[in-house]
Length: 139
Ligand code: DAT
Ligand code: MG
Image (cartoon, rainbow, N blue to C red; front, side, top):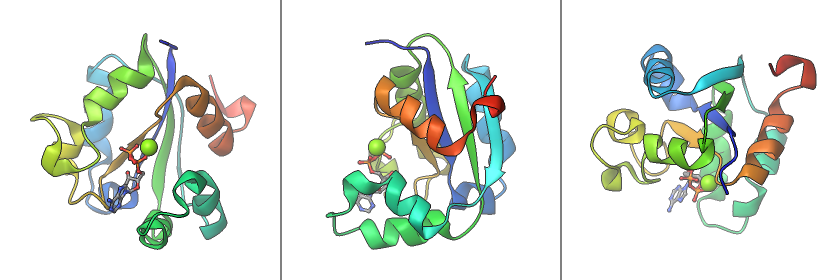
């Protein structure tokens, strides 16, 4: 499976620390084209819905608190093999396990506050993009 679209969020910790420009630069320098983007803040209901698959996990409450505590940058990215290539670019969920040079290795504080989201499948990329953007906001 190798679709051309993925969805990302630069999470509240990355925005708080002033890393928006550096992270977007690394993303575009790696061949991704930005086809939708905005600064926004998730409500508790938004975060609970977006991360519903994790609702039974022990970290769910912290995850929702973190994702709603400040603005995020939401974006849709296009490139060949976008989902897999973007997951490679961001690195492992836990920055301690992330490869050298990956976005999480460089900018993430911990597994809980890991700077950036990347969709895990073509199907979820479509669902997540549609969750954050109206059709006319995607180019
Ligand atoms: P990813 O964001 O790499 O797709 P995931 O979908 O398994 O990872 O989890 C979603 C988010 O939940 C992750 O980015 C950070 C948080 N999370 C995952 N596992 C965690 C853990 N063991 N402790 C705290 N937060 C965790
Ligand atoms: Mg995931």
